[in-house]
Length: 151
Image (cartoon, rainbow, N blue to C red):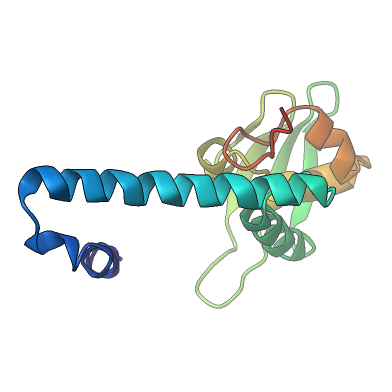
């Protein structure tokens, strides 16, 4: 992963490396500005198209929705929405127990807290209690990095 990233960056600045340092810094600055401007325009287009999530977040959510169908959910506490989830074994992965606390937005796998997108265990718990995807999106479970801000 590091090698690919370094090679990608080197390829991006290949022509700029021959420049004096002050010109190199300016060239890199304008490349970064251009990148962020392009990303902003892509997200604005997604908002206009009526999407609430970015392409990346949709891709991750769809993958995790598919995984969620194989999880076994046990309610530990109905009042505070605490669940134990046994993930489905797929090859060398899965077959582990995780605890999900819906009201606190915590899953012991830490994917929910890290990526700010409900993991497959959270989606399985929501399905178990009858929460629709829109219901928990409205509860601000989706994070600032993946939720499209229409401001």
